[in-house]
Image (cartoon, rainbow, N blue to C red; front, top):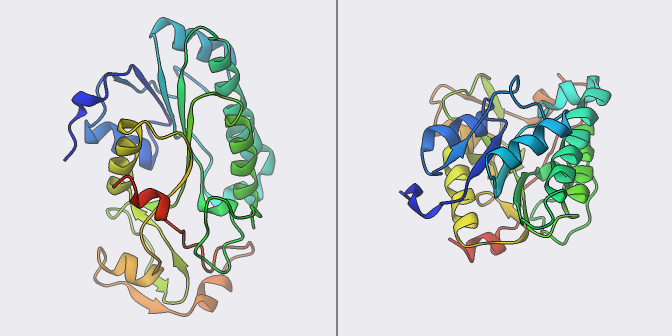
Length: 249
């Protein structure tokens, strides 16, 4: 376990009530961590973000706030843009206000920025999202790159405590991580002062094999069973090339 002592930054966590954000809080890896509620600090309000950064002398922002449910993003593209794109722009523009103070931003992106059909995607591969959520993340990444100091993490994760579905496909592949491991990897990248874009995940694995470890009564199925039940595109092979990540582990 990595202790929080090395992270002496004043850290602002946005999205602290979400799956990833809540595990970051519970991990206690990050010292001096502030995680205001959405009601207290909403990313749609740029002035409030600026005030909070100044008042609390923030020098590291963990941006986990997002509309991440694929179906909801497809059904409400305006809402997805407002939160994932405009919200990210508000954060970045607020950071840019502090010209004398270099604030680093950790942006949680997604493997959905890739086409997600052939797998083994490298950070330098062409971006071609297959759904609205992926497009919002591509646009968010572009905004984040205006900063001097940032980490863009392309990833997919799940909470082993909340696997609700009964079936999972044996022929849909990802590099999806259990969320607690993702928290640990984020802390390592910050500790080692990584800068830039990085894929964060595990070696290629089928959804069924990945989730079966945590849900013993999970049943296998063909991807057609999943695809026939939805009216939007999902990944069939979103596996990531994680050679860059391995250098830091």
